[in-house]
Image (cartoon, rainbow, N blue to C red; front, side, top):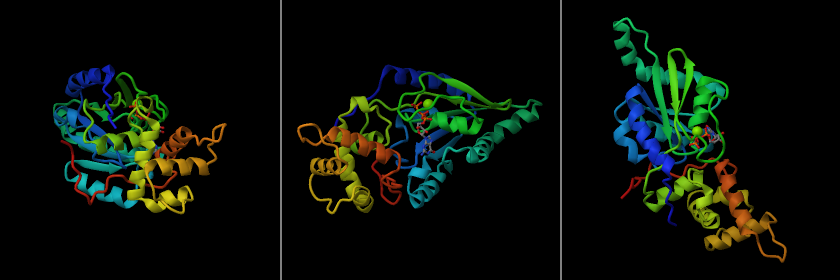
Length: 285
Ligand SMILES: Nc1nc2c(ncn2[C@@H]2O[C@H](COP(=O)(O)OP(=O)(O)OP(=O)(O)O)[C@@H](O)[C@H]2O)c(=O)[nH]1
Ligand SMILES: [Mg+2]
């Protein structure tokens, strides 16, 4: 499946990023704990590496606990890493990590007699939870959020305290999503607009992936006795089981596909990490 997604506002966001990086002290890169490698943006690495970085493995509540711990250790060798669920109870942990990352600069300014305001840039793929993370650290609903990609359209500074400000940005993808596994992973978790994809094909690909990864979760959720057959057959069987039948008796696989994707994205099929830390993951071509 060919997924190309690089609308104008993302190209603009890259340019904005080049300017904003000069104003920030810390970069908070929000990754999806279910796909920590595929959700890292290779296209802006050159910009991000200019500042100290924190990796947040967000949506850890939807990922396998053991895998998140292992990823956290692995990524921890490259920069401070925090497995995270964006809830109010985790507010302090996140704020602390940001101030730790900026501590050196804060001390440097202190020596000059200036109390520095720490500015952190929050970056990541669409729908990964950047705005939710910011709301979690700032308290309240300061940035707009929704369960679809492309919600934040322009940059927005959110003041947490007089000495901490966070910059929300639109989600960024990169011009060419390759290899196909990466493109699919991004689409499975909801980083790519569903409107530009073939929902049924995507659902079939997800079924094959889940059958390979977590056959027991898949069989249990949809009460399937067997997981044999092509993706198309599986999707039909699941849609039928859920009573998705069109007038005339044809199975409504489009509705079934949407349901499957929704259930996967909400963790209803189980806590599933698609990229396993023990595998060597091909990071691209
Ligand atoms: N389960 C779970 N859901 C989360 C978490 N963080 C965010 N979400 C959900 O993910 C969806 C997307 O959140 P946003 O904060 O709007 O994502 P964003 O990265 O700002 O998205 P764009 O602005 O569109 O790029 C929302 O439905 C959030 O409720 C988390 O830790 N766990
Ligand atoms: Mg947002």
